[in-house]
Length: 303
Image (cartoon, rainbow, N blue to C red; front, side):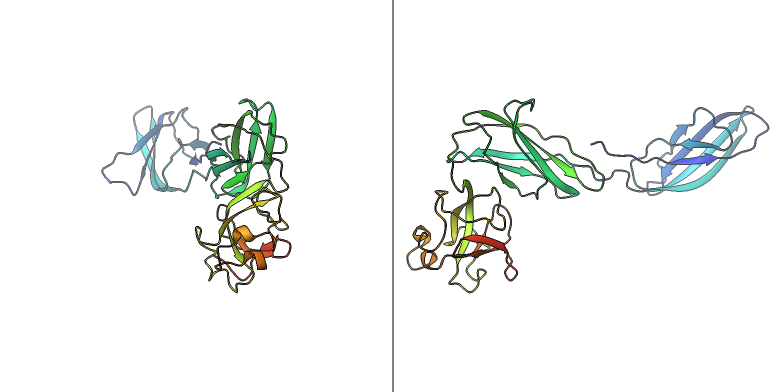
């Protein structure tokens, strides 16, 4: 989207018994060096009295001195001085997103890491196609909250196929829609159909026998609480259930022996009470340990 511009215009009034042969506007930013020359603009056609004159676009903000010079056929010149101010003539544009990385996980899941600036963001939009002209679109999404990592819905994406991906940004405040990003290319693999196909790694989990996830280090990644879980949904959502990495087994008490490290953790006995998906946000989610269901953002614990 092209940046809008603003211009200075003014009405010129004069009385002359002889025809005006030239009209010149001189202007200069008052904050500049006094020795700097004025910008000169020849007003053409010669304005009649009460005509509106529009100056060329001025990109720099500041207070300007304006001199209008009118000269008649005898060379007699009359000058009039005034001031005007320029504000910000470049409103924030709708910036084009960047696809940082596309990758295919071991189970065939395709993951995109991309950057969309938060300023004036209404929603991202992306499309997946089997041709770089995007005539055969096999996946798309719009109208959602942005997170840097996006797992594609694999339902209609063909296996072992070259795919093309592009992203754009829908802006608020009447800024419109950005250009499409540079197209990224990736080849899909065979997608393993699972109950919960979407891998969340890392997922920092704390068991329900603990009093505070903050004291256990849930806000940090790489400790004994850092695990991998799978979800039915492509992003963490209220109502989503946590599954083990096989995408079939619920992450509930009795199924979590692989999560335990000796006597340091008690997942298999007590289940998961809190989880944080560090690839998406620093939000801590409350989890019902008996069903491994995400209940919502924690109201008591925040990173």
